[in-house]
Image (cartoon, rainbow, N blue to C red; front, side, top):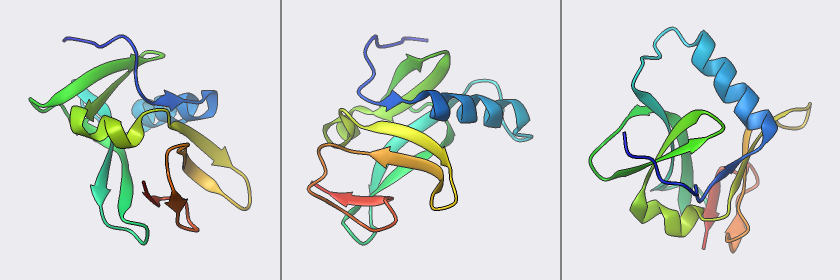
Length: 115
């Protein structure tokens, strides 16, 4: 497995803890899977974040973030460079939250953005 040194995405301590919990408790999680971080077209602001477990594809770049194997399409790095993925447990927000300093606008739910 080839691993790049500097990941363009940062996972907070809360996100790292939650991803590791999901890996340990996920019945369908298979060895050899990675945490995919990416974007896809759609959402109310134009692009939607992707976060989930997936298998590596030929055009993926592999990163190691605190022991978590992360994959990302190189073409997505232009949209994701510098973002921070957090996990919140509060009453107003629960789940993974993307803080993107490059987004020119975001939707109210925080899952969609434009650049």
